[in-house]
Amino acid sequence: MPIKILVTAKRVEDYESKIKVNPAGNGILPDGLKYKINPFDEIGVEEALRLVAKHGGGEVVVVSVGTKDVHEQLRHALAMGATKAVWVNHTGPLDQMMIAGCLQKIIEKEKPDMAILGKQAIDDDQNQVGQYLAEWLGWSQATFASKEESLESEAEKSKTPALKLSADMKSLTAIREVDGGLETLECTMPCLVTTDLRLNQPRYASLPGIMKAKSKPIEEHTPASLGVSATSNITITKMEHPPARKAGIKVPDIAALVDKLKTEAKVI
Amino acid sequence: MSNVLIVVEAQPDGSLRKATLNAITAGKQIVAKTGGELHAVVLAKDAGALANTVKEYGVKVVHAGSAAHLTNFTADVVAPAGAEIATAIKAEFVGAAATQAGRDVMPRIAARLKAAMASEILGVVGSSGADLQFTRPMWAGAVIATVKLGTAIKCFTARTTEFPMAEKAGAGEVKAFAPAAPAKSLQKVVAFKEVKSARPALTEAKVVVSGGRGTKGDFKEIDALADELGAAVGASRAVCDAGWQPNDLQIGQTGKVVAPQLYIAAGISGAIQHIAGMKGSKTIVAINKDAEAPIFQVADYGLVADLFKALPELRAAVKAAK
Ligand SMILES: Cc1cc2nc3c(=O)[nH]c(=O)nc-3n(C[C@H](O)[C@H](O)[C@H](O)COP(=O)(O)OP(=O)(O)OC[C@H]3O[C@@H](n4cnc5c(N)ncnc54)[C@H](O)[C@@H]3O)c2cc1C
Ligand SMILES: Nc1ncnc2c1ncn2[C@@H]1O[C@H](COP(=O)(O)O)[C@@H](O)[C@H]1O
Image 1 (cartoon, rainbow over the protein chains, first blue to last red):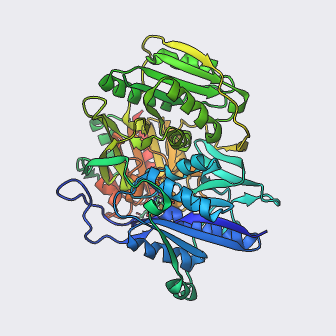
Image 2 (spheres, protein in one colour):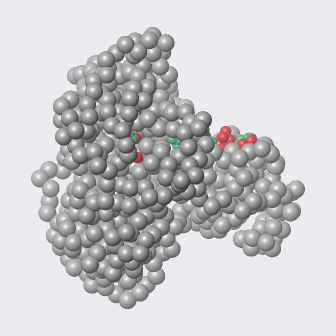
Image 3 (cartoon, rainbow over the protein chains, first blue to last red):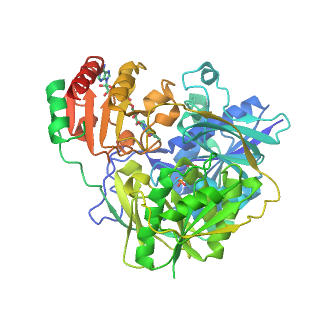
């Protein structure tokens, strides 16, 4: 039974970037920053592609909210294999309620069977959009989806999806990373999944995939055209770096280390 | 009056999670600024016993919502019941501890309340309700932002390491209520594979010994040192990805946040995503054979050495020093 899945692709600073606050303390300096698809979203695209491959085809619709720069991330998802890209054109703060509101409208139009988002965007580190969206849609939610097997297992090498759909597609079983272990959650479809790091190892886009993605159309909307208010409910009034830890020392050997831990730090 | 509601994470066995006490302290800090009342809500199959425990910690009213559909603390059922109480007591602030369960349910409660939310708050700043703001980490803690939420109701999760545990302070009142059952069940927990360990819980341990890719998956010496110190064992992402240790042991931006008295990192390079989860530790020791490893920038005591040689020596020395 073919399946249609909605995924997202937020544009974020590469995780290896050195983030520096600007002198005004109200934003970060753009110098030397590289931008990527949010790593958790890339995992979401990968999982969607695996599910489609396993269930006899279907569609993967990728959505991103932001300035025209997000076309880069949408094309990245298309190059991986997504079938359609949707851009919500918005300049300004990207707060979680606004994003969830836009995604809700797109989902109402596209009517996917399920949606897979990242658990958090690694710029804001909020970990909220999926849960807002699930509630507003009245869907089940499986946050922090993972898999039982490791990323070096045979199941991973053969690109088996970690999420399991029942034969009638009425329910989905997810393994979740919870405190103290792994939970198995059974959800009625449609379900909203958010990805954790170990759900899968995303594929590299193939060269033909990259070439094909370049010419694919990107559907455009705005918050206004979707009927979503673009005013942000979250105002950042200040940004600063956390205080640095005081410089430590190198100890020459274990004897010196144990002495410091006993007499100076008094922790053993 | 700006009331504050803390959503308590119910455990299957009805016990109190220490993280709840950290969240209660965050609630008290808000109440101290806004002058409202501190409430809590316990949602479980049988909420009474846990509500009676929570009421001892300086909470004015604990709402005990008992219902069969709350057997598991899942977001689909916790959100409507939590939002119901928030509305009934006219809460202006609704929060929970930033545990995995808190991270799962709190935004869904916020969604029901049309409330904006600040995740993983580190502190409460500002003088009164109207200009109350939260500090919270962004970009794996590279930046601390001060944020103001613009909705009538405001939600948060509190990072447990940043708020001390509330102490017992005069018993409040327990009010029972019966949360309405949802029209249909959306999700159910069918299994839980617990990571069993005789060691202290990672987020509560006074000492944590963590291993990274440098262990090549051999945790024998990490385990032995941890046992000598009565410590919990932690890991970097590389270790969990490889399946060498359970995911539950990952420390960092997207794993657990710990702040023990002593944190020992062996064979961990010190990526910002890892540092994000342990830099609040009182004393940090790093053992790495690469003198240039970034972990040394946050370590109080750094030892450039092969961990397979250093860890047994350290264990013997700790034992001798006892
Ligand atoms: C979205 C995202 C989220 C992430 N979240 C987290 C997170 O929550 N937690 C986390 O830890 N990481 C996280 N990471 C990964 C992080 O960026 C690093 O890749 C990871 O922390 C590296 O783990 P490591 O230090 O064990 O391995 P490496 O970086 O490979 O370091 C291994 C170290 O071991 C040393 N070594 C090797 N052999 C020996 C020996 N015999 N004796 C002593 N030292 C030795 C080496 O010198 C090296 O410094 C995240 C990454 C992304 C993209
Ligand atoms: N601007 C955006 N465009 C598309 N998806 C987004 C955007 N912001 C957040 N998301 C999705 O929501 C998830 C959680 O984000 P957050 O709640 O902001 O941490 C991300 O992993 C994305 O999948």
